[in-house]
Amino acid sequence: MINSTQRKLALSGWLHKEASADYDSTFKHQKFLFFYEALSKVANDEYEFSGLKGYKLGPVFSAVWGDRNNEAEAFLMKAQEVYGKNPKLIDIKRAAVGLFIVQAFTMAELIRITHTMNIWNSKKAEIEKAHLVNDNKECDIQLLETDFSEQDASIVSNMATAFPYEFVDSVKVINVMEKNFVLPNQDAEKLTPEQYDILFQLCSESELENPVYAYIDEDGAIVVD
Image 1 (cartoon, rainbow, N blue to C red):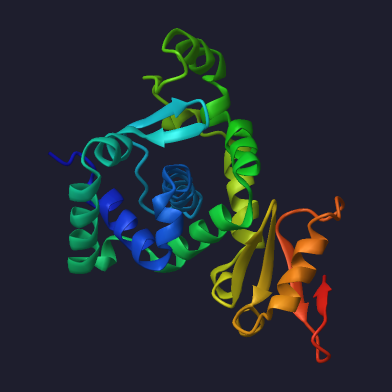
Image 2: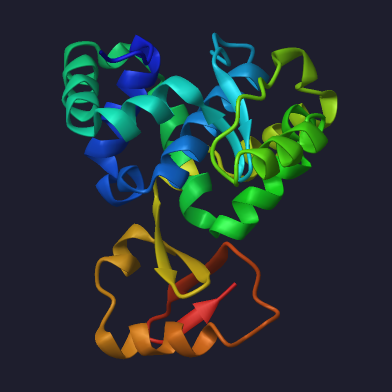
């Protein structure tokens, strides 16, 4: 039996269609869902925080977690079906911004962002205790919408401002080791092996912070903004 809501199924179906590799990561899947709902809330649109639990790595929608762990194939089929029949259940542009966020930052950075937010951090002690008791397995600490603070709203609003849809639709994120390079679509599509080697070399530059904005100049050189 699939317990996820129609909204979460539609979001999951969209994510699998647009970025199957990110869908395949349960971590990125959950971060995508969380940021989508947080972006919806700060936009004063409909949002859905029901079933949100506090896990060691951040907020998790427990029904989706359970469906993926227990009935992965059935969950994906249902997600594809729901999104295919009713794509208007979600805001495509907002979903694209949420996807960009999970692609532009590393796992450690995404954890740091959500751990900073009061909706998770207010339950930090309970979450850590529960994980110790349960041998670091999933726990049952409910995260409350009322704990989504003004600071949380500010964090999410700042990301929405920094990564508007018009921008994220024009670029592609290239992950190289622990750096996530953001290039214009036309540049990302024509990257040569030699240019990839340059990106690998740039990964050793400690002062570069994710996301790293870059482009290819008229001579074929990688330029970091």
